[in-house]
Length: 442
Image (cartoon, rainbow, N blue to C red; front, side, top):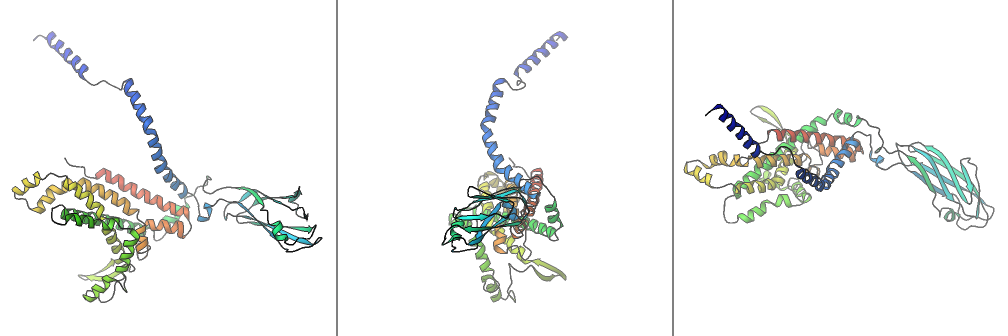
């Protein structure tokens, strides 16, 4: 073939390839469809942002502010009126005392003033230059009030006629007060004092390690128990449906019911478990499973401090949440074809080898997803530990610390700072997980 013919074939082949190749860029119709799709999804994006991002941003905002529990109520002017008289006759004098108070212990008030209606049967003598009387209305301008400050204004009044109950007559109208003050939640004063207080606390890192131990072992225990339960109930036998429903009980039962059941069973004085162990002579004295921090014993001459209460709450966590893992693992196992198991059995593979080389690779992805979900949920757990131990005996986690800071110590800012630490710990774990997690095999 000549050179010209080869070049002609090459050009034709290039033209065919260009004609058959996909068009570059999106056309006008595709762009319109994309804009329409974005417009239809915009409400969903907005709802997700409001539900997820707004509370998260609010938590970050509060963590950088010196917010106490009392600061949640904005400062306002409170005025109370007190009359020191009962029945008076015409010409009698008595005192009216107004007490003006700033309700906030930390924020000041400006432009504080109040007014009150005065009955026509009473003549007032104003001795305080901050007050004026016009058309039976007394008005007082006090200016600024410091945090938690009180001002008292005493006015002398004279009765124009006999009054049987002057207190009811004058206190029948409530004074109206005005005043403007800042709000520590909405102003732009920020501080890192909350984070400094959290990280400088002597027990913070101990609480962090307790949280990680509780989360890792509780999550691993739930997955292992769920895997064993799925392997047990994957085979057909009589009564399997009943056992499947029974295995769901720990997860569907109310947490307060199962928590107090465990507290009763593990009670050192009247608990069933201690009674059984004592009768079996396995122990000499009752064990306070939920109140004893450590149990000291020696293994091969090495002294060991075993965390009793922490191990107990980890066991409760694994027992209560293994049904979720059981359901997901069982569903995945039942979707695996039996052909490769039959072929492996014909090749002489033992049940353990079938599980190791066939089942586990198929279950790796679902186990990884379950570990991620259970890790996040367990790390954020509060009610289980609070109901079992209240965070005592070495079971105090970061979530319990959030409650103690925000509610126990009335420091909302410090509680939010601990919550920010929890967020970054879980974010770091999620990023590492997505980086190295196993993928589903075909």
